[in-house]
Image 1: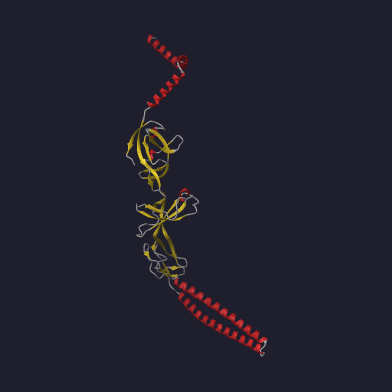
Image 2: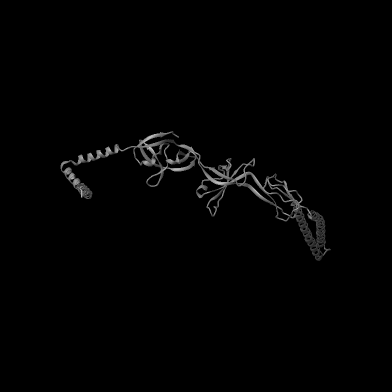
Length: 402
């Protein structure tokens, strides 16, 4: 064994022993120092010395470099963004109200039709004959009614004459009663004839309506979504003539959450950006009072103009509903941070010290995020806020003020 190996072994053993007994040696030194201080030093001097050391450490603490943005409070256009789609203001399946063969040429889908324009015409068939018969029956019933009225008046006069004869002593009570009974019978017949006339008039109305229903017309201005019925088709009552859409104005349909719907009112200004990039504006026209049972959201409809018919039904739309304006600060989203309690806020620079201020988010924007909760003017730390705490020393560099 070499002598150098022995020397190395001794050094290693001494190092291990020193590591094991270091705490005991340190405690012994501290005790000796304390005893010496207690015997030789004034406590007031010791306290002052300790304070001076702390102040020195505090003053010599290294400042953290941060980037600060000067921000001034501004008026914020607040609103709610809903994802939705366009929907026809009216969509109607125009159907036949009578039966018959189609005798009109079809109108092709995409055609714009006016209110009252003919869509489908059905064969009249025997409907005109039914109307003619009803009119003839009405004339006959009116004649019978007039005859019964005349008969009733004559019998009333006869009953009056019998009463006059009875008063002069030349008539009998039996004759008066017989005359009154005859007049009552004539009145009953007259009422029956009057009812017959009413029944015939009802037949005429039905026949007229049935005849008019052979012409199926557009109930409003709109675009045909389907072809109308083909020439020669036989249509039963309820058969489809065509589907008509009213697209001017047009509706924007979206669904608001329970927290959003309480902030929306009918008549509020609203706008939308369509999938093709076009923007439109209008007003909120309807807010549902009943939530969707599955999503727990509420239907909100906005009505907008579509004079040129460029907006199609079913197009995706981002609907923006305006709310009352508030004041806030526009900051980068990266400036937001959390404190030790998990509260959302920002850190601001005050006299070269960092301070946490909690904030509330108003809404997102393309340039950043709008927040409230800060004073009118604030110096917000936008870079380096994660490396400081309250009262930390900071070295400020300024970004362009906004």
